[in-house]
Length: 168
Image 1 (tube, rainbow, N blue to C red):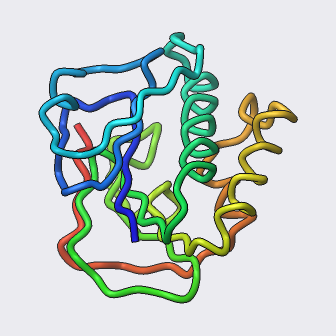
Image 2: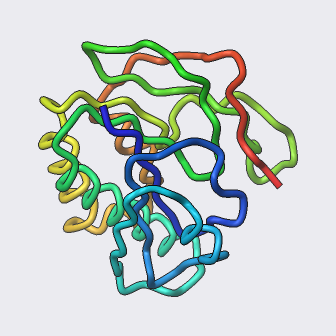
Image 3: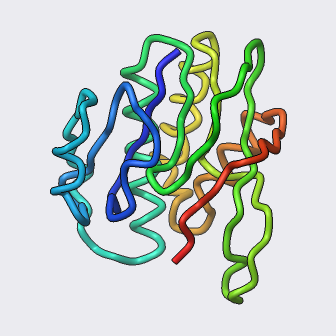
C-alpha cells in the first residue's frame, strides 16, 4: 500500500508519513515545506495558476488523474492538511470522514465525501477513467470533484477516531 498526498497548499504539511507527494508546480503554497519531507516528490504542472473555485476543482482532478495513473499499488490517499491514524483496511474502496467547514457558513461538520480514500489497485484504472471524464467533459466547471468521484466509486464510509483536519 502506498500512502500518497497531493497539493497546492502545503502550509500545514506534513501531518503524516507519505510514500509519494504529488506537487502541482502551477499553484503551490509553502513549497519550502515539501522539500523537507523524506518522501518521493513528483512535480507536475496542471497549467492552471488561477485561484478560483472552478480552477481549484480542475487542479484537484488533474492531480487525482495523475495519481491514479502512476500508482501501481493499493492507494491510501490523504489530503496534505489531514491526519488519519494508522488503520487496517482492505478489499473495497473506503472514504474517511473528516471535520470540515460547512461552507459558506463557519460551522464545522463531519464531511464524508472528501478525497481521503483507500482505493485497491484493481480499481485505480476505473478511478482514472472517472477523472478523465470529469476533465474532458469539463464537469469541473459546475460540480465538485470529490463529490463527483464519490458518486462513481461509491466507497464504504469510515469514521476513524483521532482523524483531524486543519480547517483554518
